[in-house]
Structures are given as C-alpha cells and as structure tokens.
Image (tube, rainbow, N blue to C red):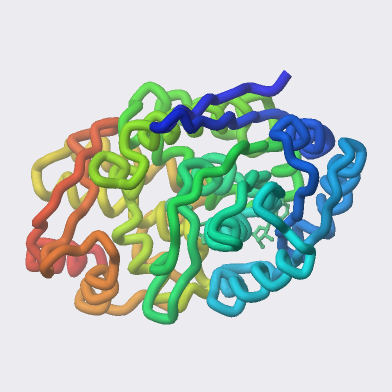
Length: 367
Ligand code: NAD
Ligand code: ZN
C-alpha cells in the first residue's frame, strides 16, 4: 500500500502524491482514474531505457493511448531548444486539452515537461512520475516548472500544478550513488529548515534511504509532507516558500561558476556546500551556535557530500566572483542579498538585506 500525501490548494484544487515501490507498474490505472483517454510520456534517454516500456505498458493495460517524447539527459535539455523539441513532439502526438502529459524522469524532465504542459494549447493536465531522489522529494511537488535562459537558471517558467505525483521508490535502485547523494542534500534540508526532529532521524536512518530500506519511503513522504505544507500556504512564493531555498543562494552561484557542468558539480552538491556555508555564515553572524553548524557539515560529509568551497572541482573563483554570481539570482533585490539563515538546526528564517561586505568577508575566510 503506497503512502499518500494530499496537497490542498486554493479554489478547490488539490492533488495526491503516492509513494511506494513499483508504482510505475500500476500508473496506468491511476491515470485512467483522472478521466483521461490518452497520456503522452516525456522522458530522457537514460530513464526511457530503464522505465519507458514499463510505463507505456501500464498505460496500455489501462486502455490509455500513449506516445513518447525523449530528450537527451542532463540540464542542457532544460533550454529553448529542449522546450521546442518537447512541444513539437507533443503536438506531433496530437496531444489535446483533455489529455495528460506524463513527466517520467528527474527534475530536468519534470521542469521541462511541466512547462511544456503549462503552455501547450494554453495548458494541458500533467502528471509527475519522478525517478530521481531529488525529484521525488522536491521538484515534482509544488508546481514550479520552467527552463533555463542563457542568462540564468529557471528564468523562464510558469506555475502549473501536477494532477498526480507517483513517486516509485523502487526506481531509485538504478540511480547512481552520486545522484542519490545529491538528492539527499535536499532531504536533509527539510530537517534543517523547520524540523530538528527529522534531522535527528536522518542522522540515524540515512543509510536506509540509500540502500532501499523502508526508511526510503518514510523519508520521501516526510519531505513531501513538509513541502506540501509550505506550498499550500504560499503557492507562489510571496513569503515562506523562500525557506525551501536554504543553501541555494550559495549553491546556485556555484552551479553558475562551474558552467552548469554536471561533471564538475550537480545541483545537490551545490546545495550541500551552500547549506554548510549558510550555517557557518549564520554562526559567524552570531545567530546560530557554532556547534550546530559543525553538526550540519559533519552529517553531509558522512553522507559523502561536499561541504567546502575547496571541494569544487576546478575551483570556484574568488569572493567577488561568487558575489557577482549570487547577484544574478532571482532572490536579489536592489543589490542587497537575501539569504536563508538559521538560528539553529530546524530554525531557518528569511534574512533580507544582508550586506555585501559582510558576505565578502565571510567568503574570504572560507576560501
Ligand atoms: P536530472 O533530471 O538531470 O537527473 C539526474 C540524472 O539521473 C540524469 O542523468 C537522469 O537521466 C538520471 N536518472 C533519473 N532517474 C534515474 C533512475 N531512476 N535511474 C537511473 N538514472 C536516472 O536531475 P535531478 O537532480 O533529478 O533534477 C535537477 C533539476 O531539478 C534542476 O534542473 C533543478 O533546477 C530542478 N529543480 C526543480 C525544482 C522545482 O521546484 N521545480 C526544485 C528543485 C530542483
Ligand atoms: Zn534544490
């Protein structure tokens, strides 16, 4: 029996997140229950080879017509060209307003397919079938969809909520160790934001998440519940949803400075370093006990994640390069930086108007 997390939104909108092993095999019945006749799958080459046929067969067993649009794996597909490829592919499959677009893959496929669904024929319904840990705990929930522009990540997008999320935790068995670790940075993040008890739990149970024990479903459900609660209260990030960006102001700057080259740094690794930095910065500002900052870095390191700027392969430039990269972030207003800082584990808060000079001095100490 899968775990269910219900996500209520305003105007009577709502959707369920189902979490359990082998949900891809029964996905067709779930989607038929949404009243669709046809479902078009968007996926990437890696995931297509592993799970494409299984999902298609499940849709066919449920009497749903289907077709597949496959993009190249990696962040490069979250681009204007990737978007055109997906939209043209869906149109060639004759996807209409009553049909479903099904995103089968990691966060790249989810963001890209979701954005195509948001805009194709002014909006078609879509379902997320996230297959990376990061996508199961973060990107598939909450309705943020989009692509990157040459000037920055996620600059083109739309809010478009899925009608259903099927997180098949057995699919994570084929995920690389590195992608698993990267997703785990986002798992730990939920404890660090507002749930010290969950961080304690992670410290004792993280190995079960990696090895596929029952802790995996428990952790995915806990993260989805935490994210759903925030999204219900602040769907469009007018306020507290920004807390989910803990570690991301630094992290996005590092991704930018490494050219979004996954051979050097993947998103979750940037988030891990960024989270450790956010806690050390909080400690330096006298906001957070140094002991908590140490505990955060130790745990991330134990799980195999990087926690220091020196760990960035090929380096990340000096403090000014980092500051400039951070200033490109959407969270920057009038030159002052907004950070998510912490008073301790599970006590993060939005700190607007952080002085550039203060950040600069901190980063120089870190380099
Ligand atoms: P990804 O989609 O590139 O997947 C990582 C790699 O794992 C890819 O090579 C993929 O082919 C492979 N893969 C996926 N599932 C697999 C499986 N089950 N077995 C084997 N290989 C598998 O990257 P990601 O880390 O999942 O997502 C990162 C993206 O998510 C970024 O673009 C980021 O901006 C976005 N994101 C969006 C939100 C949101 O709210 N919309 C939140 C966080 C991150
Ligand atoms: Zn993230």
